[in-house]
Structure formats: structure tokens, C-alpha cells
Image 1 (spheres, rainbow, N blue to C red):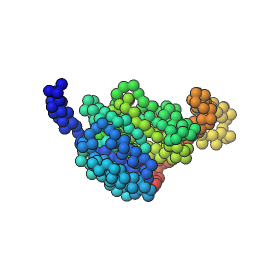
Image 2 (cartoon, one colour):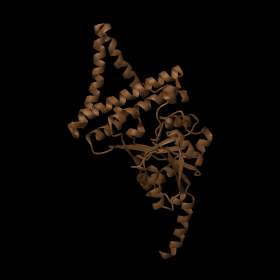
Image 3 (cartoon, one colour):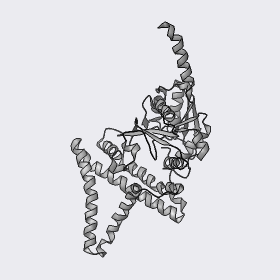
Image 4 (cartoon, one colour):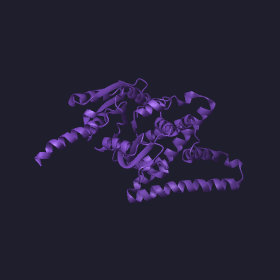
Length: 360
């Protein structure tokens, strides 16, 4: 056996030398609770550290984020970590500044609020090569922010088709397949040379628009269904409302940039909002119209109550009203945001899309 040891070492050196160099990009703003742990998650990867760099785009954090980054760099002096300033404080600027700084031929985007399996990087790189993909990613395993009934209920709603529709990267799948979008993404660097960078007008949905551009250019976006990313959902209904409102707000702008027709899934929440507000004119309409309106509204509520009750019976009945609230907030906030975004788009009022930046 000793005779083969030198040969094995030579082969290991050869195969490691063939690995692509990665530029791992992490947008961050006020992430003092999470930034150290996500950097530890990168260090724990089975991908050799000499074959990647980490670029953190800090959105002018006013907490201890920078200190925690400095702590990690001091504790792990051998890792290549670069911090770039993101004065605009929003994600697309963070991504673009990092990509311009990157030297790797593969770009991997990470989020500070997620936990990654130790083979995450290696499986993405292998997937790019094996499937000849241009962007590849896994599936969200949505987890509660904490052990409260509210957090658990929000996490359930955010991973159920009634909450997020047929979004495969949230509800999962059974086979490797082409999709419209994947969480975060692992891109060939040449993709950005071909179609440009992320659209900086899009505070939200910039990944959807970018993946849409990729597909229009004939590129391949693939999902690995068994590569799970632990994603921590919002911990309050207010934050859930804000998140889905912003997704809805920027969706019409993203779709218009791609010159596409909105999907049925995208139109359901704004249609629901219009339908609910139409109830105010019922007193002026015939009784038959009111009856039909009530039946359709009842079907919608029965669907929500049914899913929420089924889940609550299996877990805790205290979660029933919370799950119902989460579903309704997700639908209503997305719909409101979508209608406002559509109005801003049709009226040419770009101020509609000027919201407080976020690096998450």
C-alpha cells in the first residue's frame, strides 16, 4: 500500500489544481448576528480554501458587522477576504461592485441568513460542469427564525404552495431541471461578460430579472433538488408584509425589462386585492352579483382555513390563526405592491420604486 501513496498524493494535487477559482460574494448590512457564522460555514466547506476568495459588500452597516468581520479575519488569517463599500446599501449594487472586484472564473452568491451544507460549493461546481449549466443552485429549506409559534407559522406559509405558488426553488422538486430562478446562484463568470451585470433599479427581483435575461440569451439555469439551503424566514408579520410588498412592487418593473407577459401566479395576488376592494361597490349592484362575490371569497378563505387547520391539528392549534394571517398577509402585501408597481410603471413615476435600501 505504501508503494501507491506517492501516486495518490500526486493525483490529489492534480485534481485539486484543476478546480476552478471561486469568488464568493456576500451582500451584508447590519448582519452582526450572522456574518461570523456564515463565514464559518464557508470555512467548513470541503472545497479547498486556496481555491476561493470571499468578497463581502458591506452596505454601510451601523452595528458591529465590520467588527465581526475583522474578528473572523484575525481568527483565520490564511483566508482571502475582501471588504468592499456599498454606499447605496442595496443588493444589486453590492453584487455588481463585488463582481467587478472578483478574480474567480466562477461567481457564487451567498446570503448571511442561510446555512449551507459542507459540500455546497463542491456540488455547485460539479453541477456546473456535469450539466453544462450557466447558473446552478439548490432549494430553500425554510426554517423558523426562532421557536415561537409565530416564527414557525411564517416558515410553514413561506414553504407551502398556497403561499408561494409553484416556485420550485421554495417548494422543491424531484429531479435536476431547468427553472426560472434559483436561490442565490453559482454563475460562470463569462455570463456577466455576455449579458451584463444585475439591474441596479431593482431593489428586489434583481435575480429574477437577471436569470430571465440569461434564459433569453439561451443560457441554462438549473436547480439541484437535493441540495438544500437552510433559509431563516422573517420573524414577524410586519417584516413578512414588507418583504412580500417589495417583491410585488418590483415585479412589474422586472417583467417589463424582460418584455414578458406576467404569469398567472404573479397576477393572482393583485387580482385578489382588486377583488376585495370591489366589495365596496356591492351595495350598488344586483343581489346575484353579491352572492357570487361571497361564494368566491368564501372558497378563497376555505382554502386558507383548510390548509391552516390541517397543519395546526398536526402541530399546535395555537398556530391556526397565525398561519391564516401569514397566508393573507403574503397574498395581500404582494398584491398591493404589484398594483403600486404597475401604476408607477404605466404612469412613468419612478419615485414609486425609491424605497429604503436593504442588503438582504
